[in-house]
Image 1 (cartoon, rainbow, N blue to C red):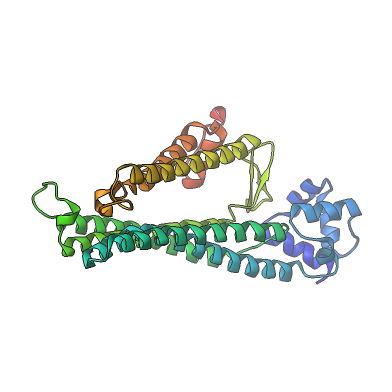
Image 2 (cartoon, rainbow, N blue to C red):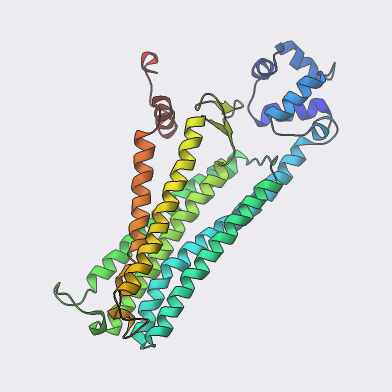
Length: 350
């Protein structure tokens, strides 16, 4: 492709008019029209500005094919993000299934030390899978810092419908599993020791955990796929957090304050999860029983695992608080209009 063909492709791909491109580069619309007609060519500083604005390189812009480069970038990005998504989902599902496996093995009469060791192995395996997936993702971004994926509108529309189905299915599976757990609960509400629970109910509890893992996995998968298609990780730090890169709004700009908030939230989430791990171990070992004597049902490990779902809920509460009370007025308005395009704002209130 020639320069003029690449320029037309870039402008159409990002939905930018000749007037808008001219304004971005500080030239007239007629100048852009002459570039696209091949009458003349931009100066070096304008070429470099084009490369910076639309994430391409000078060689592709002048002698190669920006379209082919974008297709290759998209294929590479899509394959990696799918692997990353599968890794995170698999890790979470395995960790949630750990308690289900423990209940199932207990019902089968497997020795307490063996069943507990298998449960902890699930925790370790799930955590390692997520760690490897996260490190690979970080390395991929480092090696492909200038990547510029792009999805056609039909692909985005198709996923939009699938996203709704995935989330609804995940929520439905979790709700049905709760109903199943309540329906098969032993007795009339009296407290029953775990050692006295029948194998049938332990199997129900194990199934409950497996279904919860499936539902959570579907929801996480849907969210990560949505992030992939929205290219949520491609952001620019700009003075105005509501600014967007290009007319299409494909790349979002974030303010320094918003970027700082992201990092602060990450630190808070990490702290909460570390406290949960500490609580799990301290409560488990300080209550006697397994692994020193007796069985794991008599030790704190029979209930210390609750620290992890509690930590997850706390992370959600913190995220909701931060997203509600720590955002600027402009950010809240922009997000509200994104969710509801029919929402109108009085110019005097912006």
